Image 1 (cartoon, rainbow, N blue to C red):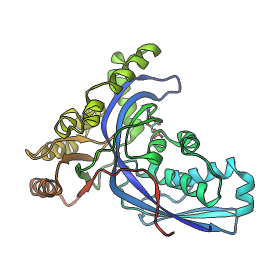
Image 2: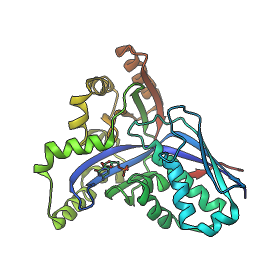
Image 3: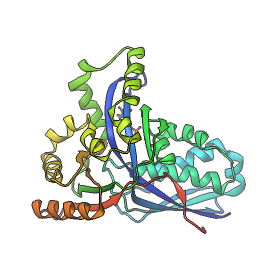
Image 4: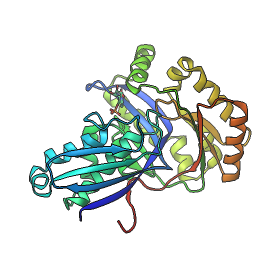
Length: 316
Ligand code: C5P
């Protein structure tokens, strides 16, 4: 095999709770992650040099070593130097549909696709847990991006417990093109404002994880209770991002149309999403938001829950 094409879906956070600090400087989190049907396509080609090249259809995406997809390929080359030496380098082409710096894990999804793709291209035979272990070295969201669907993510976000797939939920996504939120800034500011509320004891942190796992959001997912899922959407980072970015707060308000099950910011933002139980309702919500916010910088998408993470494109 000399080439491999993959689909890399974006994610939203149905629940994001910051539990406390971690010795590694990150935050201990409890999140419910959900893949959505807004996808990048990643094409990998073997090239007969010892280089890793990244090209992206979006001019705002760097093609140098700062690109997570590049770093994923570099990590694989370092871990499997003989294979890399024998099979040569790789060219990575990213067809970008997922907005960048959006809180939708677009960069993480691309890196996840490179790990999965090189495992196939280089016939390494790594299992999904092995790939997820490598993924965790690159970023907290990347292990989830590999398996996708609906999952509880704990620790830094890298410990994944699959949850039942929710079918039939539709999503309206909204993002201002001219807005980007830095994830490190959002977490750092949260720490400055709320660390007095952090759970510091490790056993108590573990207990809080158990409470979330046995809690109302996870139970609503098991029962496929759409109304409850909508009511229970939660994101601690809204406390930081909404006051600092009034346009995001305005979008969040505009999304809370009577027909939606719930609306919330995803990850560290600035993307806001609303859930509906039919595609028609999602389209009406999109049109209503468009009519309320007359700003050419506002992009809106109608999409739906997606049941998997990285998959290969059929026949390639
Ligand atoms: O892991 P990732 O590179 O996606 O994280 C980006 C930044 O978000 C980290 O550098 C850190 O500042 C913050 N973060 C955190 N705790 C987490 C995940 C991310 O503080 N569990």
